[in-house]
Each structure stands twice: as structure tokens, then as C-alpha cells.
Length: 279
Length: 281
Image 1 (cartoon, each protein chain N blue to C red):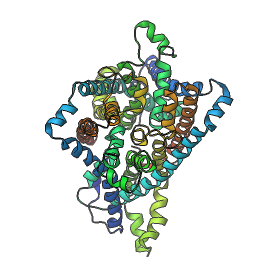
Image 2 (cartoon, rainbow over the protein chains, first blue to last red):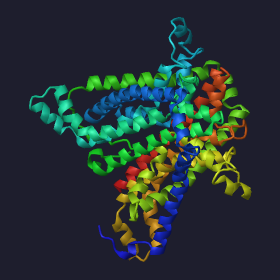
Image 3 (cartoon, rainbow over the protein chains, first blue to last red):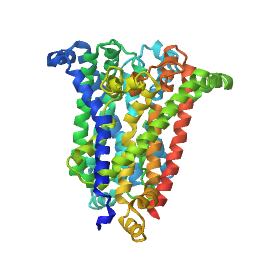
Image 4 (tube, helix red, strand yellow):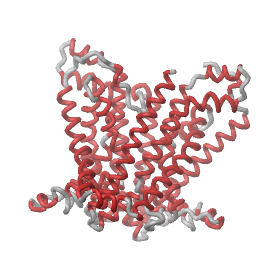
């Protein structure tokens, strides 16, 4: 591609645009991130450490990790299955199915939590039935997992579908012709082909699962030390005016975001071809 | 959210596993998303048409829609301007630290919304780093409707940047050159040649930012004052109704929000057709 000099803006305009873009991003994105870290360490490293290791914080960290450990693998299996069906086969209603898979992205997180309260809450459809059998879903772990699964459902699928469409079917067809069984073909050919795309999807899915606030807030009941995930614990501390502790737990979540961004960028730089469509 | 062109492959597939994979997909999608969403509609219609209208369009609900959708529109407009600027700089210019700058754009996707919420509140409160400057100018942000806009501007930026960026990168330089040869100034070239090429992508980014902003909860509730009729967003009103055990009321407002979500999905699909036609032309 030729780049003749009059196809560029005057140097002054170019410099101005770069400065404006950098300034805007610094003000709108970098400053809030810095504010979290500054507030978290405002009372010193000792206070930070104390707030992180305090029992309610530890229980929130445990719950967040547990919820992600259940929700992410479930949506990973779903994502692989959905991408296999959609990208490698022909059937009617495929476009509709793709739209429905992306539906959770367009639904407000609060509505995503509400749906499970309407089904399983004390006055919900199955509320009495569940109460008679002493099964707790809302204000307990199952509800938090369900809400998280709803919100993170599209992440892996939407990453894998365009990638597997681009890759086509020839590798798998060759494996079958050479006598591989269906599962052998999947483990030895398909999975290695999509591994970086899968990792990318899982990374984003995990970040959202650990950070989800709205949907989980509706179903959790905010029971300290029991049903508070890390984002909910941040809210509880903040509303108690315990700002140092709130920002301390928030700084852990900010760290998670930074690790996610770093890994995501590393994948994009090193394996761009194997990620194909990014959106 | 690019839906792949699934019509590309037409030959019937000899690959195994359609039954199993489609079975898992449809079961999981129905169990987690479709059946629960249907429950919202059924619950909101359960009390009859009049009850639905009375709760879904009560004065308090109407005020919350005005704020929610109004703030989302303003924020999406702000993000369209600055998202285009950021995408332009990312695609067309080289400068030190560009990779880091590019990676940082996705921060709002990765940062939990509650963290964004308390961080923005700390900055924009009257004693905060930015609030201290704005408040004496008569521009208080935190605990006001303006705070909602600030939170949604934070949340929405990557949607515009990431939709415009690839289209801008693929836009043909030859057309720009032709415009130049025909005597167009650089500004004219941008307005008449480049902008029409990226307009569908920009509109898609706007719609995505709007849709996300309208449903946003976590980053908003800390910085908004949450006063009924003044600074209360619709998702918060749903939670208030739930806490009062008014399930039908919560479901009615959720139904209105869901209808807007579905409408936005349709708009986005139309925009995608437009974009495909543009890039094919």
C-alpha cells in the first residue's frame, strides 16, 4: 500500500490528534484505575494486607473463585459445542441461534439476575416446591452460579464461531479419512486448532465471571461471609464508609483486570492469525 | 459482535457430532437463557394488561427510563466522537507506547463495574481530583444525573473503538488518493470519502454502547444519587421493587427493558447488513 505524503494530515494536526486521544484515555481510563490503587494503599501496605486477609474478605475471595471455577468450565463446554454445531454443519435457523447465543450481552445484568428470582425466589414459580424440600437456590451458591452462567454464556462461543468458520472442515475431514474416530479427531485436530481462540474466550469469560456485579447482586442476598462475592463485598464495605477496605478489595479486582488485559494483549500479538475475528 | 457469515458453506457436512453438539447448545441455551427470560414476560402479563401498564409506566418508572435511556444516548454520542478519534489514532499513526495505549482501551471490558463505580465516584465527588475542579464551576457531577453519563462514557468507549478500528484499517487508500487527485482537500476527503466508509461501523459502535449503557448497573449506582424521579436508573428501580417483594412490578419494568434490548438487537442486525453492503461495494 502506497503512502504518499499528501495522504497524511499536516504534522501539527497529527500531533494534536495523538495528544487529544492520549489525553482523553488518560483522563477517562487511566485516572480511575490509578484512583483505585492510590486509595487502596492510602493507609499503607499494612492496612491493605489486613483488609485482604480479614475473614469476610477471605470468604468473598473464596466464593468468587468457586463461582468462576463452576461457571467458566460449563460455558466453555457450551461454547465448544455451539461453535462445532454452528461452524461445521448446516442446518436451518442457524442465524437465529447465533443471535440467541449473543442475547445475554444485550440484557441488563439486573434483569439477568431477576429472571432467576422470578423462577426460584420465595414467591417465584418453584419457590414453594423448593422450600418444602429445603433446597436453597436464591440467596445461596446455586443462584449466584446461575446468574453468572447467564451473563457469561456468549463469551467462548462468540470467540470460537468465527474462528471455526474460517478454519473450515478440511482438517477434520482428512482426519476422518485417515481412520480417526470422532473423538480422536476432536482431541487431536479440532482442539489444537482452536486452542488460542479458546484460551482467549475463557480469559474474557473468567474476567466477567469474577467481576460480575449486577446479576449476582440480585440473587445473592448480601449475606456477609456467606454469599458475598468480591464485587459485592466492595459494595458492602463502601456503603459502610469503610473506604480503605473497599478500595483494597477493589484493587485486587483491578489487578485481575490488568492480568487479563496483559494476557489478552499477549495472545493478540503472538497468535493473531490463530485468533481470527476478534469481535 | 460480528455474526459470521454462516451461509458461506453450503455443502452438507460429513463431520460427526451435530446431534450431540446441537443438543447441548439448545438445552443449555433454553435452560439458562430462554426459559428464564420467558418467565419475565409471563410474570409481567400475569396481573393483566392494566396492572402491567400501571407499573411499567408509572411516573417513577417513566422518570427512570428518561434518565436511563437519555444518559445512554448522550454517553454513546460522546463515545462516538472520542471512539472515532482513538480508533483513527490507533490505525493511522505510529507513536511510542502505541501497543500499551491500544491494550488499555479494553480496560472497561476487563475492570469489574463495581470497581469502576467507586473509582469514578472518588474522582468526581466534590472532594475528588476532578470534582474539586468542576464543582466550583457550577458543574457538580457525582450524585447527579451527570454522574450517570460519566459512568456510561467510561463503560462504552471500547465498543466504538473496537467496531470502527478494523473497518478503518481496511478502508482503501486508493479511494483517498483518487479524491486527492480530483482536487479534494484532506478535510473534504475525510468528510466525503473516509467518513461514509466507516459510518456503518460507527453507527454499530454507537448502538452497542447505547445498549450496554442502558442496562448498566454496577458502575452507575455508586456515582448516581439514586434519588427517585431525579437520579434513579431503571435497573435500580427493578431492584427496589424486588426488595419490596413486588415481583410483578419488577417484571413489568424488566419487560420494558427487554423490549428495548430486542429492538436494539434488530437495529444491530440491520446495521450489520448495511456494513456488509458497504464493504462489498
